[in-house]
Length: 190
Image 1 (cartoon, rainbow, N blue to C red):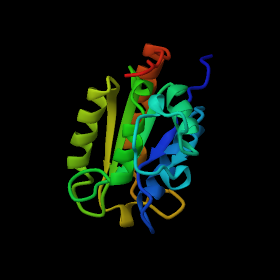
Image 2 (image 1 turned 90 degrees about the horizontal axis):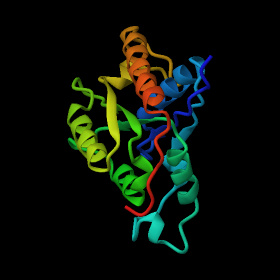
Image 3 (image 1 turned 135 degrees about the horizontal axis):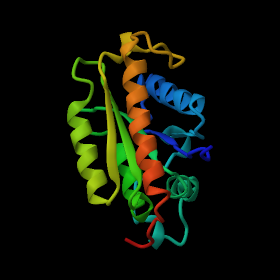
């Protein structure tokens, strides 16, 4: 039997009334039901200030940043759940991602984009793929959630059965890459 994977779910929004929290709860719950450790990394709780310098160059990192870095560094894979804002990512997500770099090295990443509209954040998905390729992570799985208000309940349960099937395939791909890569070491100082 394989050891449980550690797959944190990074929620890329702090907006009041955020619908992407529903999808992050769904993702974490399904990953845990499949045997993974899937803590929710909520940027509203981590509360990072505007980045002045990357973590590895800071003598006095802001509270929450070291834990955030450790969570990414120790993960077998990461799921990023984010709404699309004006065709791209929320500033808070970009800010958090820019604080760290080497932690992403060869890390399998699953991208789940969320939108209240019918396209499900497809433009954001493309932007995140480019970012993760740039930091030498491996964006290997993707899922778009359209019309989130009518697709998920507040507690994270899907109202549309297609999301169960879609996420199962997403998680299977992410797990395959995480096990195949086998915890590639992060790099420092990039």
